[in-house]
Length: 249
Image 1 (cartoon, helix red, strand yellow):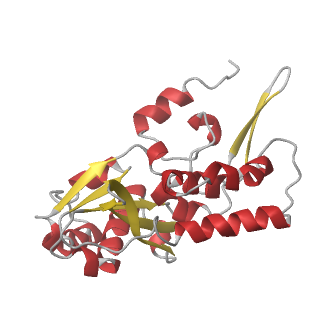
Image 2 (cartoon, one colour):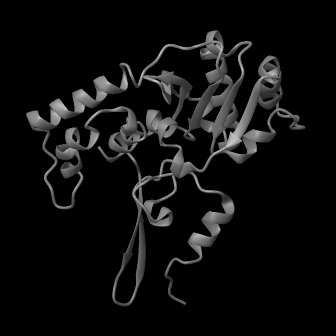
């Protein structure tokens, strides 16, 4: 539920009475509250889902305007993307959604590293949305820094070489932009919601420290993130946060 609300909150400015509609859903996420889907909560969920898939959140593409492609990949799990466009709605500029796409990784793809999975996500999204993006000017937003160098990367990896060739026709009109993971919830939500978020828990006892793992699943723990969102961290950030963990000498 936290994942769904985080995803929906990204578009809250385009959903009338969002706070009022989601009151019962947010209460469900409170501490010590029994997870019970009553009719009121089910209706609220369906109402938000309807709003996310209809105007004014969902819009028709204007091929004269530039677009924004938000992509995200989870190692060993899924791929997700959202195609946005900024249009004039009711006399005001507003960023709406043209479409959402997502899929699970194949068994062979689940063995890819983080960079390879991010590159796969970009190529897959471009292929799926080619009718919108071929010949159009667009920006790609990702929280994988290595993806920015894919176009000019020198590599002997056959997958990377094939993907470089696949995106050549988009090079002129495509700009890849890095975006912090905590701001990337619109793309993150497509794959993270259907999956059980697997966490690392840290337990401190009077004279000992024990760490219990509950199937991490390729995601950094909430403890290291320091908030309720699960995001990809850069290596430098992860090291800094990990150094702050308590330990016994």
